[in-house]
Image (cartoon, rainbow, N blue to C red; front, side, top):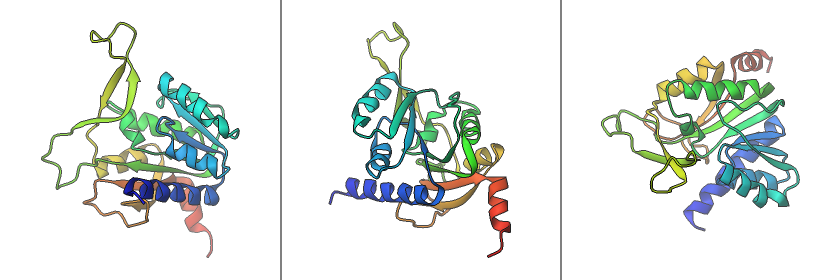
Length: 221
């Protein structure tokens, strides 16, 4: 089996385990690439995906018609308001890199916190964390997400705008989570469950609001 398919299978299994633990419906940030939403939909889970790109949101809606329990909404990650709470929110495929700009990641996490049901969890995948080994390497262009340019805004008639990866360290990620009231309860270097280490540039995590984490820890065994 190709390594890419092995990765997607492990990713789907990882998120399926979380749905079994926390329940649904599930909110997925980003629907363009589709592996996560498609995988959850194929397993029968109810999913709401939000996607800031009009083009990709339209494509996702068409593609996901085969899963009637899956819906896709076009919305900005930093301002969305679905009037609904979810026991599980997933930010896959380096979605946090979309929060481009000073304080943007905290704004995104604030939105997630407002949509999280009591006792719920946020699952995320962050790639390209700047570590001691990579600190001397300038951040490179990041293209996990694109935005449509404003009409007439591109002289070369290109309709898509590349985003650049923000400078993000494990410490800054931790601070952003804490600032929005989250506390990580699981951290891995891959979807196979290998423990995360300070030197790893990829972090796959599960976080809950601090009050929920402490209440769970206080329960008798």
